Image 1 (cartoon, rainbow, N blue to C red):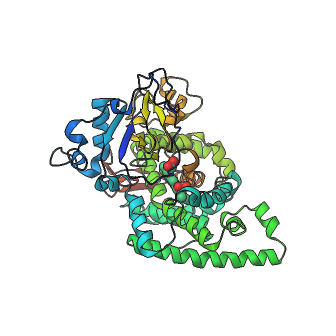
Image 2: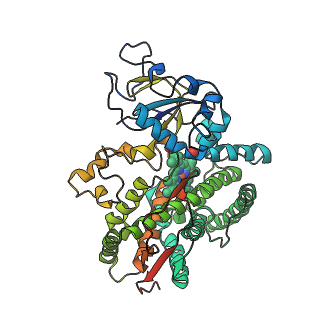
Image 3: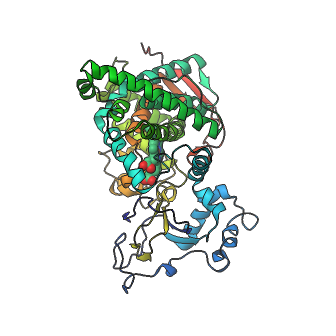
Length: 476
Ligand code: HEM
């Protein structure tokens, strides 16, 4: 497998040379994939020899347009199809030169450019997701020390459990849902509010981007100062250190960190809040859809839940640790419906050799995860939902993907990887487990699949109706 010696998004050079690496190149030269190259070496093929669309397609500005309507059947949202065709035509590593075409760049980084414009216009400080270099590191380090600690995330299990119980009761009242994603957005908003603000919000934040962002910014400021007061009270009473030790709490430990000002904390909190809603809601939606489409897998998961929890209704971190099929169900759904349009994407900070080709620094490299996770060389029967392929005990060919950890990176990779991964996983495990514990779920008769569309996150193309058959379990 190619190995990523790619660095964090350090530079904002707008040279739009995109190298799409669909999967491990089948023909590697003597130079190892991912090695830092010696551009003069005869073993390494030059950048110019990387296959890709030629002649007209290389004309700056205009060349990009030739990939889309009216020249092809594709619109810019179909970028993944363009990349997939390019892979079929040119192979595992494809170079698509786009010149300085900002339109296409916007489609690649919609979220980023939109929020960059927002920060420029409003003067609101940049956040974790949009900062670069030292400024990014100054925010990321203190937050990561807290957020990626298993003890901190485990501490949120009872809180997420409570949010999930309310969600399940809401579902029970309704009997079915006609817009699964909308329900899940409320659920993930409430869950992430527990992490960010230490309390439930009870509001639906479906407003326009700028208004929402500004609201969150103000909420953040207000909540942080309220939390700071709480913390000062604990400190006065001499209880703070013990409290932080017994019940590691994300927001309190940030406030307590002398490297973090209120503005910095707010900036982190906003990134988490914004990044943590759509991502998780869409991913849970597809897990539930895949389980509804595959009743025998749903039954196996239900059996695991019953065996692990017995008569208990409260889901604990100990239960979660035992539920390997649950985790396999979530992971397999992320493979089958890769959650992001693009995934980890990096500007190179130094020259490297990738799949035997020299790639100069400042090239934008995009490992095309959407294509990798559907590659039958790594995932046999790729179009089927088979959670068993991720179970440790599975020995046959179907489990081949376990040997390629870099083939499946829904949370990205390295220092710039998703800071919310542990929280998101915990939230998804609890959400899915409690829904399946309480309901047998199905799609309307005759529905054999759900079309997807790609925004920043992969999302159902239309509202999803979900039938809920109550298993009559009390959650009290
Ligand atoms: C299933 C849900 C999620 C998926 C698939 C996901 C995926 C990702 C990916 C692929 C990245 C970029 C990683 C890279 O470039 O290597 C990222 C970054 C990020 N994610 Fe997530 N994420 C999810 C949930 C969350 C949650 C729940 C939070 C917050 C609580 C969160 C906060 C962030 C932040 C702040 C960044 C930017 C980090 C930085 O630039 O330093 N994500 N996420």
